[in-house]
Figure 1 (cartoon, one colour):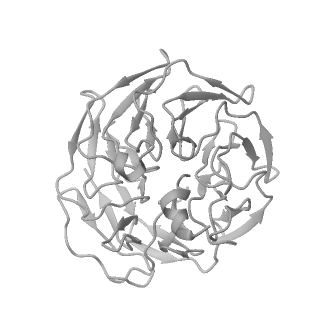
Figure 2: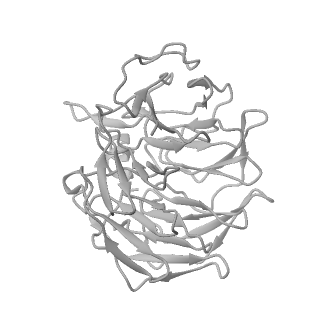
Length: 374
């Protein structure tokens, strides 16, 4: 399997400076979105995890087709710069997951490290020593899976792609034993879906690719009390994958964008709200730009609105009161597929990397980073 396939289809499942960030991107892209210190390497389909001390762990990703990354950096918000971490990941990883555990460590699981098959390996980032340590393997090789922290401190890992087939399997990571245990199965294999922890402790799964060339509008709920999945009667208005979802302040879930089975040619503007009390989906007004490959780029702001930063050369804001979208003035000038967006403890949002297609058709990542501020 070529790595080209990884980037375009495995997500069938995403001014160079030293990492010390001494040089700054000086152009003010807009009144809300400002370029800051660059990463040492361009990257997309990486992970960005807010740590308990307010710094952000940036790990893995890809520079360009066939060039995957095993290094990591910390973003220092007080100085708006990146600091290189000497310790490297045990594997090069792209399309992996990273989950902050209750004890402050970060679980990094799965993803691709080569053009053959996804990884079943996992590791832990130790913030005290800034090092990575291996833990027990996943039960299955996975990319394009989801990882969700449960209320009991464990992590549910579900779905994805093992290199040959889309998965309906799920497993739970226990941070007390640093091991994985299989649990109930999804009703349908899903890949590059979304998973959102609800206020009642259950997890909403939406959309995903269920087989090559076919996406779904179905949704289901995982219950941690019974470790089981149940299909919702209600379906989304659109079949979608490579989309995003986020919990709103009122406990409802905003689902945005993605694409249908046509992938790049089927990018969606549509968005909808899931109401856990009624277990229904209701369409909102459309986004202003079609967006896909946007997982983990929706951020709930302090004012209750949502910043949607990925999948387009512009960012926009969702207002839950009017169920409508408005454009953030200016643009990042790049499509930013498989970028990351992380809300910092001071309320700002850090946007990192992503890739765009250049004239030759090769995915090319950026080393740039931006700060969004209301």
